[in-house]
Amino acid sequence: MVPFFVQIKCKMGQSYAVANALAEAEIASEVYSTAGDYDLLVKFYVDHSVDIGHFVNEKVQCIPGIQDTYTIITFKAFNA
Image (cartoon, rainbow, N blue to C red; front, side, top):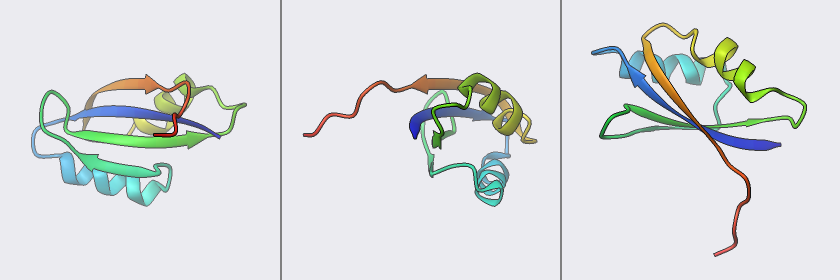
């Protein structure tokens, strides 16, 4: 599985609705509320054969209440 993160900027007053929609869709591993330019930080895992761009476009950005997304693709986990 390939992990990646998406920062989500929500429309005003829609953060909880978006977080709930992500939970109900059962596509996210973890959902965090954040302060700053983005409202949510969401961790996803997809199979190696899945195109991350298509996944974000078709499964995430279509959720009502999302204004903008910023995808962070990870390369390697380090043991600390």
